[in-house]
Amino acid sequence: MRLIEKVWFNSHPAKWLLVPLLLPLSVVFWLLSYLRRFNFKVGLSKAIKLTKPVIVVGNIGVGGNGKTPVVIHLVELTRSLGLTPGVISRGYGGEAPQYPYLVTSNSTPREAGDEPVLIQQRCQVPVAVGSDRIASAELLIAQGCDIIISDDGLQHYRLARDVELIIVDGKRLFGNGLLLPAGPLREGQWRLATSDLVIYNGEVANSAKNLCPSIQMSLAATELCHLKTGERINLVDFIDSHACVNAIAGIGAPQRFFDTLKKHNFVIEIQQSFVDHHSFTLADFHGFDDNIPLLMTEKDAVKCRGFCKPNWWYLPVDAIFSQAEQQVLRDKIKAAIPRGVHK
Image 1: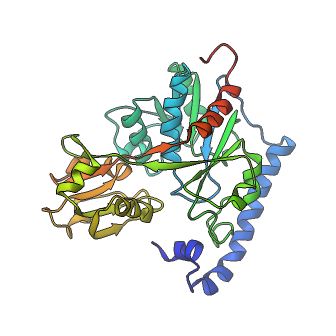
Image 2 (image 1 turned 90 degrees about the vertical axis):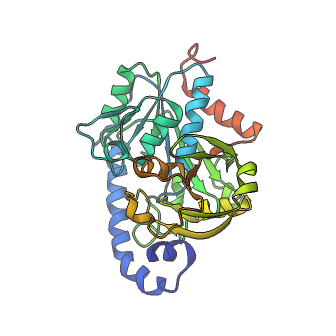
Image 3 (image 1 turned 135 degrees about the vertical axis):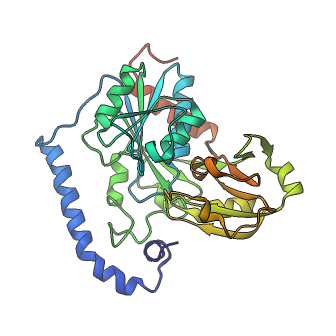
């Protein structure tokens, strides 16, 4: 974990030096954010309403909250309602030949970004990336999509939305509660009360839930997938023969991944964290024993398939909701869809 993240989330002693130094920048950040929201509120800037419903999945803090599993869950949920979803994303880290860029089965993370490639490969759903989310959404609508799911984009106010979902890490919550860069927040906690629904990833105290309408989810894994062959093995069966593993994670909250492995009774010999959206090369893995399974996240796996070794596996995770909470989410989406369209 980077030092600044330790200051944000773990109350590292360096906070006494860094937070006072960064607070003036946080004030500037707040002012610019406020002016931008104010422009939309008074009509100086216009939000654009698309011809199809839009679901925005975002957060008020920086990465690692569980947005991507929620987006994948929403793809399946909207399909169950008889809809044809499409996903738009900024495509962070990608360098596509043109924008908006339509992600295909042949697209690479270098072109489209890791999360869009993951979503397209996992769900076989149309995905478009680009900084202009309106243009990306219109491209998907032209492809036949009748509902748009925006992966992130909570602060992209130019895109009018019919349903707004905010994902919060139940463990880290809001860190020190300060705005960037002194803290991890893009917007203050007041923003939760303006959304349609807050989804807490993991257990959280009831005092936090009282801020707004909310439900809870968990991330569940049942099997491991081999990078080279695509072979899938049940976690229990895998652990029976390979309890000792190495692990890497280049996501927003890598410790969550390592904790998940330990919860499933893996013994991790070496674990190594990388920054979110890290662009992996084979040199990043020189310190690992090729005779011990190396486990990684699905998001990391899409960037490593081109040079993976026979002992590399990834852990797909799914967003899990109780029946009651799933119904709350389903009702929010159905309310945004024109009558007669959904099942």
